[in-house]
Length: 132
Image 1 (tube, rainbow, N blue to C red):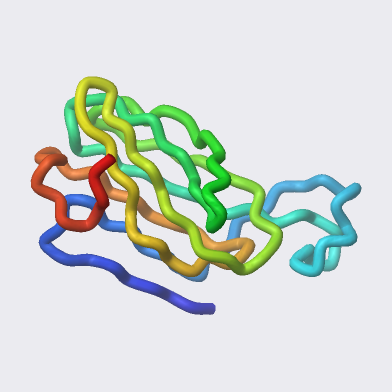
Image 2 (image 1 turned 120 degrees about the vertical axis):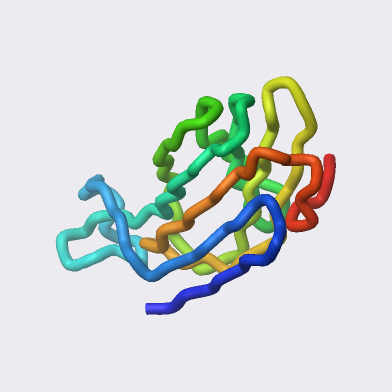
């Protein structure tokens, strides 16, 4: 299990931990990252939104492929999952409902990883994201 911690005084923290999460689709048993039961792995993204605004989140893979994760309401938390079959970098795009959006720095992600994303209350002051 690996852990990558990317924390600072930044307003967005993205933490990769080794805890796994997978859901079943036996038809996906040909994946090299399937467990013994043939279950395709996912990446789980747990989000804590400390901002008052709702945020729409996107998983952005290398090569600019975007997958909409969903919306996390202001001052709440949510859990999202995205299919993940290979080890590859991931960025999260955060789009506030009434404000700016940003793209996190790239982090390496493996199937079964769990990410924790914290959106801070003062979103504009973050140095952790690239503004879009």
